[in-house]
Each structure stands twice: as C-alpha cells, then as structure tokens.
Image (cartoon, rainbow over all chains, first blue to last red; front, side, top):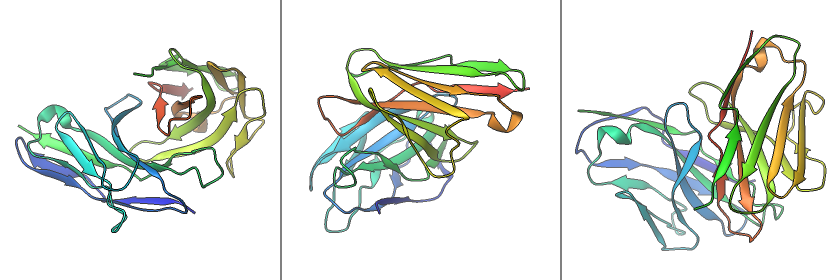
Amino acid sequence: GDSVTQMEGPVTLSEEAFLTINCTYTATGYPSLFWYVQYPGEGLQLLLKATKADDKGSNKGFEATYRKETTSFHLEKGSVQVSDSAVYFCALSDEASGGSYIPTFGRGTSLIVHP
Amino acid sequence: GAVVSQHPSRVICKSGTSVKIECRSLDFQATTMFWYRQFPKQSLMLMATSNEGSKATYEQGVEKDKFLINHASLTLSTLTVTSAHPEDSSFYICSARDVQGSPEAFFGQGTRLTVV
C-alpha cells in the first residue's frame, strides 16, 4: 500500500536558518503530493502541493519539488521565522488506491524556531 | 480557498453522555469526508471515510457503534461519540474533498474532546 516517511523531529533551528524536512513516499499509482502545517491546537492547513513530476509547490517562502526518480518531496525554506514553529505533515493522495483519494500522511515533523 | 468549518472547537462532557461534532464545507460540495483522531504529539489516525448518502467506511479497530458518522448532505458530516469515556478524550479532525475532484483535502479546525 501507499506510505509516507518523513524525518523525525523535533527539528530545532535558530531564526533565519535554512530548513529542510525530508519526505519520501511509496505509491501504487501516480500520486499528488502535499505538505500540510498544523499550529498548536488547530487543524491542518494545506501549505503547498504538487500534482506531477518536477512540479514545484511553493507558498509563504516554503518550497518542495516532486521528484519521481527519488520518490521524494522534501520541504525547504531559506530563512525560517519563529512563527513557522509548527508540525509539518507530508502527505499523498493516490487515485489508484481505491479511487477515493484517501490521503496518506507521514508521522509529522515538529519544527521549533528560536529567536 | 475551500473552507471547512468544524464545530464545536472544544467540548467537555461527562462519562456516559454522547457528543456530536459537525463538519461543514462552506464554499464547496464534498462528496467525501474523512474523520481523524489525533493523540498528543502523534500523527493523524484515520477513523472513517464517509461518502454522501451512503454508510461510512470504518478503519480497522474503530468501533462503528461508538463513533457514529452521518453524511446526509454534500456539505455536512457529523461524528457522534456515543457513551463517551475518558479514553475517548482526544483531538478529532475532519477533512473534506471537493466534488469537482481536486486531489487535496481541506481540514476543519479540529475539536478537542475532554470526557470527565
């Protein structure tokens, strides 16, 4: 079945540091890939997405590129802020897995940014 | 963008009572809605998938009679926790997919349930 593996956290950085959160996936079909962000006590918000190979999703300074050859979708940001502190989830949805696009999530990576 | 509204955001109830959580898609029609449970510092656990007008599909290990899901319209799904116990205390999150078929799911704000 489909699966998503992302690096374990917490990731602790100083403000303005470079961020990378690794994400790799396995899928039976040709999935769409997503990064979601969850702030404390809230639901998940879609951060960015990519629907085909070599697509780059970007939003709020975050970027991720759909790499089919390495089955990866790593999240990057050049300069993090304290307000970026949250839990980040990598996810995929794959129509091949039953046609219902049930999202498959990674375990989440907690990011803590210090001033 | 698509908005999913979940209500209530917090609820405290006594053991043995039932609690209903609503999930509404405000500006799109949702053929499919998902209900998740999230324990502290853990990932999302999919509880069930509901399609409008049909019975929900529950994941293995989730009690159908305890977690009643109704998806009566294209904009509303409800999760009722029946005869709640302290171990049911958790963060419950719903998400919905647009009937137009876009692959991303949009999430509600979550409901913090505390059973005392």
